[in-house]
Length: 80
Image (cartoon, rainbow, N blue to C red; front, side, top):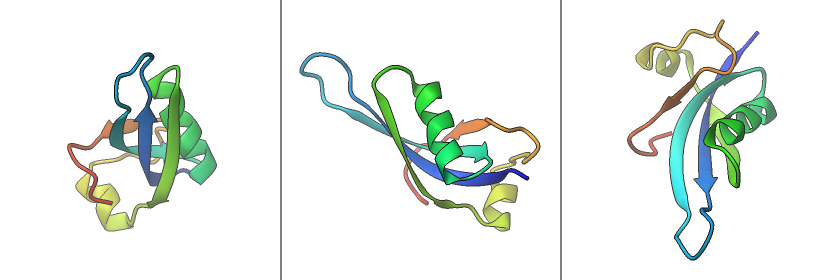
């Protein structure tokens, strides 16, 4: 069964540009799978860290379907 996780993705662009950090929600099997899905979605040079599993209430608030493995939803700010 899939679960939903809050993940922080860091993308370090080439050159001297500052790294960008994006909070996302990922539907995945476990915390490691969530980090992998998020990093792959962000592209080359991205790193992801799973912060925590979302509660049932948070899953409903974000309208997530746990049957959709790999579903990813960007958040406007980190509020996990």
